[in-house]
Amino acid sequence: MVLGVDVGGTKVAVAAVDGVSATHAAEHPTVTVSTDALLDGVEHAVRGVIDQAGEPTAIGVGVPSQIDYATGTVESSVNIPLTGVSLRSELGGRFGVPVFVDNDANCAALAESRIVGVDDLVMLTLGTGVGGGVVIGGATFRGAHGLGAELGHITVNPDGPPCPGNCPNRGCLEAYCSGQALERDATEVASDRPESALAGRLGDDGKVSGRELVRAADDGDPDALLLMENFARMLGVGIASYVNVFQPERLAIGGGLSRASHLFLERAVREASARALPALWRRVTIALAEGGADAGVIGAGVLAALETAPDRDTELPKATTTEGIE
Ligand SMILES: [Zn+2]
Image (cartoon, rainbow, N blue to C red; front, side, top):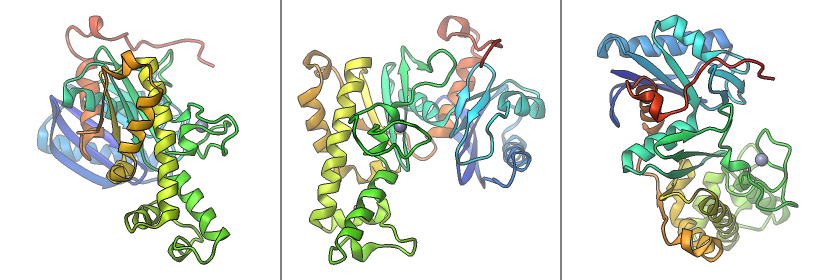
C-alpha cells in the first residue's frame, strides 16, 4: 500500500492509493506561516490516514513547486514556503519509508495516463497559471534534473504581455490561457470602458476575476466572448506545438478553468487542427481530463508505486543522489 499526498496552496490532501483508486482520503488546510509548520501539518495529515489505512511501503508527494527530482529538493515555490527544502529527506525522516516528490502537474499527468490507460500523454492544467506534464512510454518526462516539463512557458507570441508566472519571458501560453491572464484582460476592458458589462463585474479588489469573466461570457457579453475567443485561439496554438513535439496519443485538458471548456475547447481544437502537422494530428485525441479532484493524490500514489515496483529499474531512470547541482 502506498500513500499519495497532494500539497496545494490551500489544502493538503492525503489518501491510500491502490492502482488508480484512492481510499481513506483526508483533507486539511495548508499551513503556510512557516516551513516547519507546513511540514508538521503535512505529517499530521499523513499520520491521520496511516492510522486508518495502515503503514505504507512508500509515499508520493506532489507540490506546486519546481523540484530537483533526484534529491526531492524544492528549487522554487511561489505559494507555499518550501523553497530550498529537501522535502524527500525531511518527510522520509519523519515516516521512515521512501518518499518521492514531484511537481503536482507531473503527478496529475501521470494519474491521467493511468486512468485513461494511455502511455503517451500530454496534460495541460489550466488554472491560476498554466501547468502541465508529459508522460512518455508510461513514465513521467522530467528533463535532466526533474524541472520539466513547464508547458505553460512556451512562447506563443514573442511580443506578448509579460508572463504572469515567476518567469522573465513575454507572451508565454500562461500569459494568455490562465486565470491570471483572463483577470488582467477583463480588468483592462472594465477600466477602459466604465459602461461595459465587465465594468459591472469589478470586485472589491478593483479587478474582474476570471470566474466573473466566465459568467459574463455565459451571459453572452460580447467583450467576454471576445476574450474567451482569444484564449481559445492561443490555447490551440499551444496544443498544435505540443502535438508536433511529443506526438501524444492523447492531450488532456484539466485544471479549474477546464470547467469552462464549453467556452473555448471547440475553438481551440479547430485552431490546433489548422496548425498541427496532419500526420500527427490525425493520431491524437484532445479531451478533457477524466481524473477528478483527487487526480493529484492518485498521481502521487502512482509515482510512489512505480518507484518502488520490483521491476522498476527497467521502467524508469533511477532517482539517485546527484552531485554538483548548481
Ligand atoms: Zn512564462
